[in-house]
Image 1 (cartoon, helix red, strand yellow):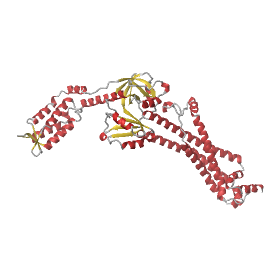
Image 2 (tube, rainbow, N blue to C red):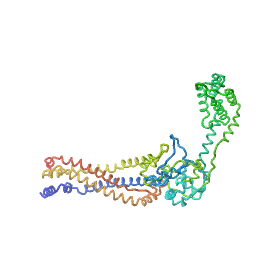
Image 3 (tube, helix red, strand yellow):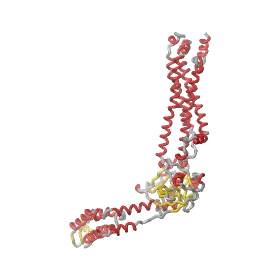
Image 4 (cartoon, rainbow, N blue to C red):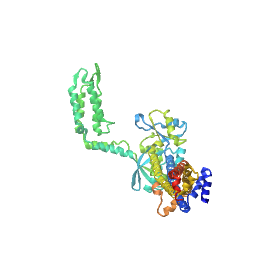
Length: 549
């Protein structure tokens, strides 16, 4: 009778107080409480792991973005008429014009290319970026990235000095004060072009059919008249076009002697005068014979001498630059970055730009609004200027980080899902063991919805408490993450090795929105885990449940 009176007292209370009915539905309180605590801890661990992992990945992303924005222009303008990139000459006027635009803090010269770095016999291809050392904001951003452990500074001035990335410094064993040599890759382009020409067959062999056809068709269709040697205009245009294609760009695709002869033929074919209805051209007398004589000189050329002329014709060799390393800046091998910074005049010489630059670089008030500023600038610039924002340049990397975070969230969510299954299993066990108590409550007037709430609130309470405990533990782990990392490193289990990530300490950034969604997900899964057995309990038939009471 006392037990039934207790059920009546519970049922007579407000619906939310039915959560207290768990006491009366559970004669094995110690066993049930232990399983409940284990489930709660499972939820807390799931929230903890998700929160810490996402915070570390968020901190890693912010750290890399900070480094990127330290050495990367927010927007780059490059002169590309008809889609062909060309050096920007007279860039000062463009920089002054763009620098006055809203949201633009400054505009400065931009140049970059590849060089061969040579240090004590170690050689490799690295990217360089030339910066205007007179721009204080740009130099300040580079100073902020300096790695203090190396010492040095970023004050290059206009001297032959440079600041290298931390990855290059580690690869070549560079220290502040070391001297390195930089070889322009433009030299290799010139030499490679010359080498290709010397490896080709003489044009008298490679284009024998074309030269023979030119000779025969001129002879066959030429008629000597009062106006000179008369030839159809269409034929002249066809033969002239073929010779121009053979000559190529400045005749650099053939040996100098061959280029001189082909150029003589082109000049002769274009020396005609208009006749009558302009369908004919009158060439000076002896022109066709002169063309034949020029072509007859091709077999007489000394190929060895011509190959030597090719090598001597290399137009410009950029001498190597001896530069002093005065600083090392923070970088990560996970993101493309310049291997070395040099003053603008040095970069112009290495790339052979003379007074030109690759483009005009912009720094804006808020780099995360770069795309909007880019759209605004397009309205005031001609179509000859190509614009690229830092977001576009590193878009693939940002997408990769987002996908990794999504996969980590998906994989680690299974910890919470397993805890939810445990909660569901506990609830099912209770409904089977306590069906007689449930029958008593229903016989005394409890509504099915009230029975559902008893179990549903149990799951909700576990979800809330588990989320709170998980968040608190997560904040503690994040707060002492460096000590934890050092402790694990001493045991040989460094979870974030600096040698791989180029970051000395584990970064972290807690995003409140991410934490909210993690807790919301844990709460919903725990609630759903309690809902299914609750519905099962509510369907118990009171009479059948009371038979063995």
